[in-house]
Image 1 (tube, rainbow, N blue to C red):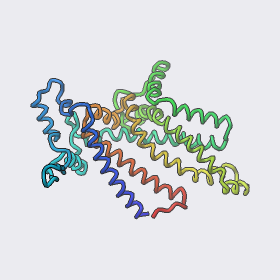
Image 2: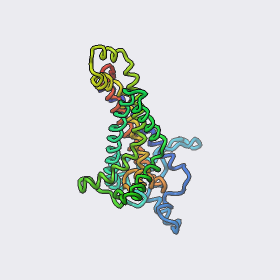
Image 3: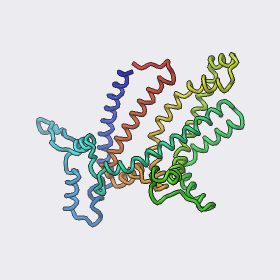
Image 4: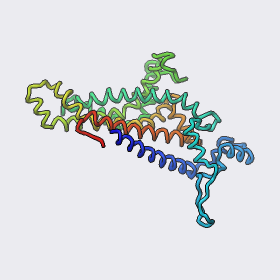
Length: 332
C-alpha cells in the first residue's frame, strides 16, 4: 500500500506540473487584453502601463529556458521568468498580489472557509438525500416510491441550478417576506443560526444535481448487487430483508457511489461559482470568476493548480477507500 501511495503521489506531481504549464500558457495566449491595462484603468498612460507590467513581472520571459534554433548554442537560461516567479511564490506561500494589489494569500485565507463550509454542507445533503433514496428505489423497484425517486432525480439533473437558486430567493420573498442573509457572510461561531440560514439554501441548490446523480448510481449499483448469489444465500438463511440490504448489499454497492462522490467535488467547485454569485457569498468561487474576467493571471493560475491538487488527492483517497469497502482489492 505504501509503494502504491508513493507512486500515485509522484504521478500526481507530474499531473500538477503539466497542469501548471498548460494553464500558464493558455492564460497568456488567450485574447482579452493586457492585465496591466485592466489594473491601470481606461485613462492610463503607456508609461504607467509599462510600470505596472514591470511590477507584475509581465515584461520578463515566460519560462526560465528559451530555445532559439537560429542562434547557437540554441538554448539559453534566464535568471528570472514569469513561470519561475509564480512557482516560487506557490512554494513559499506568498502567492503574490491580485488585480487590486491585495495579497492573494490573505484573500484565500478569508474566502476559503466560506467555500469549504458550502461544499461540506452540500456533500452532506448529497449523501443524506442521494444514498437513502437510491436504496429505497432499488429495494422497492417499480413501485410508486421508485417512480417518484426516479422522477425527482431526472428533474434535479434537468433543471439548471442558477434558475433554482433564483427561485429559492424570489419565492420566499414573494409569499412569506423571507430572505436569507445576503448582505455579508456570517461566520458560524458568530451566529450559528444565521450562518445556517445563509448556507443551507445555496447548499441545497448546489446539491440538487449531485444528489440526483448519486441516487441514480446507488439504485443501479444496488440492483446489480441484489442479483448476486450471496444475497440469495443470505435470504435463504432466513435473514430479515433489512439485514440483507444493510449488512450484505449496501457496503458492496458503495464502490461506484464513492467514486462519483469523490469526482463530484470538482464539479461542485464549478457550480459554487454561480451559487456564490447569486447568494452573495464571498467565497473562492466568486473570487475566481472575477479574476477570470479581469485576466488576473496570479489568481486564476494559482486557484487552478490548487483545485487540481485537491482533485488528485481526492482520487487517491477514493482509491484507498476501495480497499476498505471491498477487502478483495489489493494495491501493490
